Image (cartoon, rainbow, N blue to C red; front, side, top):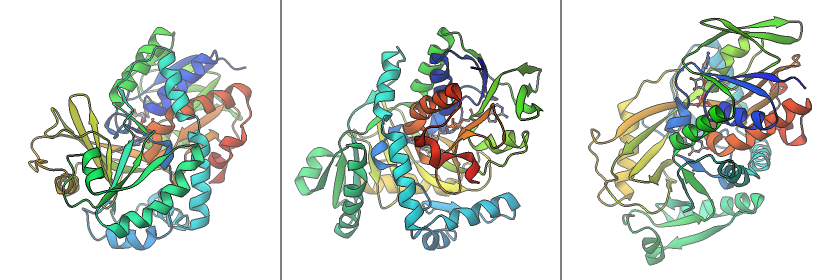
Length: 415
Ligand SMILES: Cc1cc2nc3c(=O)[nH]c(=O)nc-3n(C[C@H](O)[C@H](O)[C@H](O)COP(=O)(O)OP(=O)(O)OC[C@H]3O[C@@H](n4cnc5c(N)ncnc54)[C@H](O)[C@@H]3O)c2cc1C
């Protein structure tokens, strides 16, 4: 077994992979060009939700996205661009918006997420501390038709991982469960076993564990090249110096394509920007994580604060905050939560880039033609949920050299 590995990227995927690789006996170095946990891995909504794992490309999305492209406050916004790599990505994305590939993706994600809760429990058993809540997730709907339509999907989704839901919940039963909801909400479905965590506490917990277990952590170091010898990477080149290694894992989120280019490989990832808004303290007491299904915005109550999150925007790899998109999240929340303030100066607003592959599935495995260069990215809206499970799967295939059936749908060679 090769014993030195450099993990490029200090988000949830890189940190989880480092945790699992270290446990398999590897000598691990993690390098990241910002602070650990920067970006999507810090600003996400904190949902650990294997029961609702779906690829973003889905039947009907082409029609909707055409309509949404005209409004920059819609749930999905695609900024027109002439960048050739984006046009190619977008065409591939639209091609995957069909029922066959969607359900294939649902099955693949369900299989990867089957051990999710077990892996989060394993983190805790290893002494990694993080803020976690077990209040399930409440999906709420404004109309009886909307609720009725989605009930079928809940019935198809949840049993895959042995998970359960309660619903439809309407009237007094719903207000008793979540008193903060306004009369605009007709009904809900409660996935009772889903969890939520505060993402920065998990990142910090992982960093602490890695430090205590001999992993070298280098922040504010940018990877600027890979030295290739035949079908192997021998060195990782930084802005300051280089490091000889036996293996490399690219886990650089939305920036993974540029690292893969150093090895002359295409990893088709675009950044799908999302926003989060932190209210400390929470202006209204909310008991459960809530998804406002009609808007696709989410609300996560945490200790001493509430986080709102949402929207998907393809407008390049930048951190620019568009006020109209943030406003749509606040307005949607004020619609359904009694007394929620609309003053945009209250929350701390952040953005993050979800790494999105055109088929909506992660890209995990050896890069074609390489024997010691692997990639783990493309987790889209599911990176926190699937992080520890991905870490465990990576450690398994990098240690044994082979890939289990579980990872076949995520093979980088499919592009
Ligand atoms: C608003 C929002 C809400 C979300 N909610 C949820 C949720 O509730 N549940 C869920 O499961 N998922 C959620 N997600 C998705 C999840 O956050 C992402 O899938 C996940 O964070 C991706 O992790 P990553 O490690 O692949 O990428 P990142 O977190 O982007 O990490 C990549 C790292 O690589 C580093 N890097 C980049 N280039 C270089 C370089 N050249 N050299 C060195 N380092 C480099 C970056 O600095 C960064 O730290 C959400 C995302 C957003 C934006």
